[in-house]
Image (cartoon, rainbow, N blue to C red; front, top):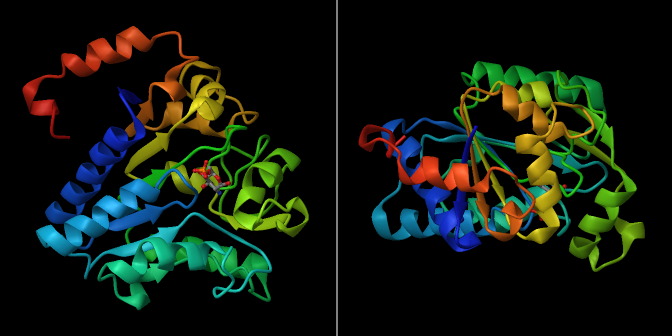
Length: 262
Ligand code: GLP
């Protein structure tokens, strides 16, 4: 796991955006795994900007989103489908047929989830997966005690996640759907490269447990310690509870020239 601590969330997002742009430029038909939430918003803004001003071309890119609330239609403003269109897809040139987001209205959840997994496989697997992290250490919507080998499936949110996400529902917890479809931890672990972003003191504990704690399903993100190519971009606030901070800075400052770009 490469841990990069930046002075603020803007510089972390800039680094992550450069990485995504580089991946898309070197492999125009890249398969991207995408996340929602407040954290990746600046990253999406930067990619939109690169598309509009620097010719970053998404016309062959395929995308798979991590998760969706069950019971929300794509046109519901709180759905992740709506979020992605609003904050990214409607501003870049990814063909509609290349966009995949779990269908929160599917009549048959198990068969939808199976097909989602197969679709990822048919696309050649995810080249680069963007992740945020929940304050309880979840990735996607894989809540604590999720199987570390899990695949796309239904999950029930914890009360903590319901509270955290209520801000997207006008602050009303009772409006947050309790059930979701999420890629599993096993699905996420299959991505060739993972880029995880985390900002703010609220994420500091989850970040420390993910990077330096034991691997446990109680902290789903800790499974990433097994992933061979995960880059974590965090701001100073989110790094607050790490023990090895000065080592991560030391490593980053001394990266061999040939490694700086990858
Ligand atoms: C949600 C999403 C996650 C996201 C997390 C953190 O629960 N399912 O993919 O990483 O929240 O969200 P935020 O970035 O808004 O803190």
